[in-house]
Length: 413
Image (tube, rainbow, N blue to C red; front, side, top):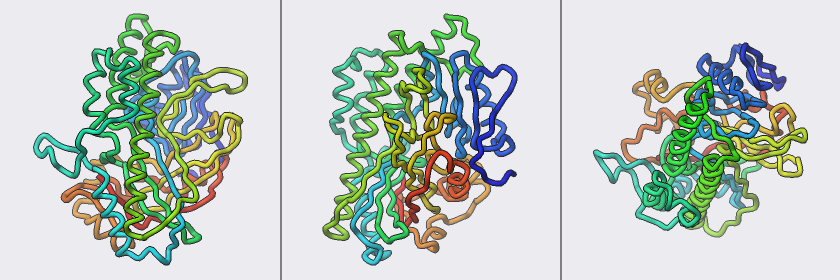
C-alpha cells in the first residue's frame, strides 16, 4: 500500500462525467467503494467528486465522499442519517481532577440521563429509551407541510420519542483529554429514524421520476430529483428539518452531559464549543457556479466567506480524535474527512475477533466503556477503523490539525 501523502490523485474511467479527485491512491480504495465512486462520477448531473481518506462503502455513494451536481439532489448522496454530526466542547476541568473513578461516575451520570440503544420486538425496553417528548424541529416541520405528507406524517410520534436519544452503532458520548490536560466532551449522533424516513421517502420518488424520464442510472441507489421540481423542493425542505432535528437532539444530549459532569466534578465552564455536520447537501458557489454539494461522511471546511473553520474529526473509541481548522480547496470544494472511517464491516470485525472482551481490553488501556448490559460494542473497537493518523496525514492540504484528543471513557448504545 502507498505511503500516506496529501497529494490528491485524479481519477479517470470510461463514462466519467465529473472531474474526480481522491485523497487515497487507487490501490488503497476497496473495490466496492471504487465502483461506487465510478458510479457517482458517471451520473449525468455530476460535476465534481472528491474521495476523502476515510472513504468506505455506503448505500449508493461511499461514506467519506463529496459529490457536486448541477441542478439535482441525490437522496442517497446525503444518506439515511441526515444531519449526523459531532459536538466537541473544551471545559475548564484539568486532567489532575479527572481520576478513573470520577470518569466512571460522570459516564454513569450521562448514561442515566441520555437514553441509548435500540428497542427490539423481543425486548422493547432494551437499553434505556425515551418517553415521548415534543421536538421543536418536528413540530415546525409538521406545521410546514409534514402533516400533509401521506408517507412521512406517520413518523412524527417516533421522532418525538427519539429526540435527545443516542441510538447505537457508531454514535457515542465521550470524555477526552488534550495534550495540555484539559477535559473535553465529544458526542456524535444524528436524525435517528426521522432522517431515514425522509431519505427513503424521497429516494422512492426519485426512482419513479428517473424511470418515467428514461434516465439511465449507473446504480438504482443514485436516483435523483430536479432541485427546481416540487419533489426536489420538498426533499430539500424535509432534509433541512432533519438537520435541525439532529441539532436539537445533540443539544439535548449535550445539556444532559454537561449536567452530569457538573454533578461529578463540580462547577465547570465550557471555553470552546464546536459543532460539525457531516451528512447534508447545500447550494454553494464555486468558481462562479452554483452547485448542489452533497457531503456524506464529509465536512465543509470553510464558512460563507471562504475562511477556514474549526471541525471535529473523531477516530474510534480506542484511539485519538482531532480538532482541525479547515483549509480552502478548489479540488475538494472545501471538504475534508469526517473521521477515521471503517476498514472492516461489523460482521467481519466480530468474526475476526471472536471471544475478545472489548470492555476489559479498553479498561486495560485506561478507557472506561459504559453501555447497556449485553450490548455488542466489539464492532466499534479501534480494529474496525482506519488509522486516524494516516487519515490526517493524507488530508493535510484540506485540514490543519489543531488539537489532538485522547479518550478517557465512552458511552455507547
